[in-house]
Image 1: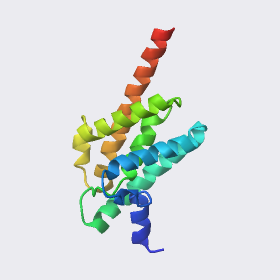
Image 2: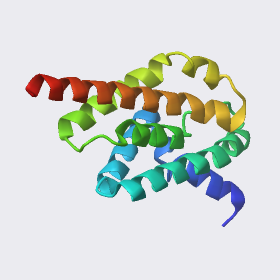
Image 3: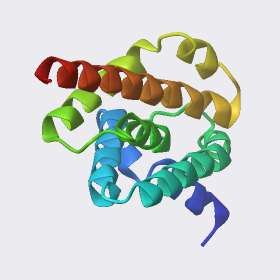
Length: 154
């Protein structure tokens, strides 16, 4: 398989990024589906997420050059990784997953500090970093919400 096809396949997360509207949202949904498949084993989840992030850093800058567009909308592996980070160490509950999805999409759009600055980095770093920050912020917010909820219940 030619190198360009492999890079496009990975960076668009198996061509999900080519869906005609809201590709980033569909990339986030793909992250939720992966979460559901691997959520029961933290070591597998952590290793898979880390591997996907590394893979994202390896291919997204090259995809940007192939597509001849900075942070092309069809590149969605960054959203998949951000969504997986949003849900790591979070107990499975459909309500929590929905909240995580909404929070992640909002934070990915708003790009709170330092995400907006990181997005301006060149190549893979600029593509991946803002979604990693949005995923980490989402996770931190969820952790706080879950702890406050359990504190109130106790």
